[in-house]
Length: 380
Image (cartoon, rainbow, N blue to C red; front, side):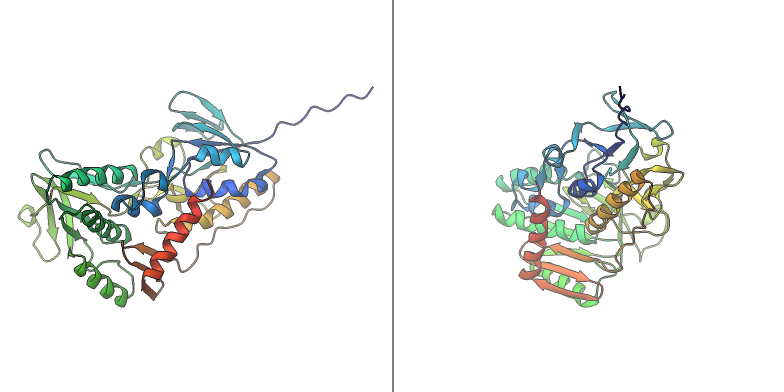
């Protein structure tokens, strides 16, 4: 009589977070066929690329969302609704906020990012951030009510990067769609908008903003909120308490850049302060070869990357290869960011595309961006 050998337990791959990288990773499920894969979904996915259209009212709320659970099941991945509370990387166990404990053989973290913002003041302007994206939907509903009542809200957008520029333009589109008026002021602490972009693109953008009746102030750093507006310091003003100045605003929308999500330091993994979970070029956590991280929550030890969706898409393929290689005991490959990334801005009625020192603007650039956004959402 022959006794069959006991079947080896399948390795457990735990994906925590349903951001761009993990949703793209689901498409590479076949590379991880030997593993039992589980996705921890904190509750729906808002595509950041469509946030501008959501704010202007061009998109309905459901048009910018994916259901990660449905997508996971389609690719043979088990979805779990929950949020990560703590991690024991030595024992290879993750604990969720509801108390459930999930063992893993390999772990990948794609926890997203948060918006930086000074604390609100009461009394003071209503304070909004660009993340989570649902906050922009709440801002839209609030402004729609004010515009319907005949108010002309004063909206201050803080941040002269791509996000701030898009937000300012979409606010103008929202006001026009509602048949109302709004004062929109875009401020940046830099000496110009879109720092690092070609000078010609910035000149075109400034003319476009002027046509949209969007005012711009450069060299201004917002320091806090105050009754009726915000406080700021200007580069051409002296230092000290008397350097604080004031700008009127009913709403302050902060789009000054993204920060790591709160609580990373409690996970027991190496962290680069202000940047996120430290990862090697293989996307592994230093000292924990079975723990990977990618997307906005991760920070390469060797270089600093802007938090762009484009980098997340490229990381997904490398992450899939390296998770598969780790399961098979094979060598891992390094993630090499593309030297030149393309930035696409949705300005409402026009688009602006920038790649290195090349740029083009108009409806074709806008159509390109919207097509790319639809391509990601169409996978659901």
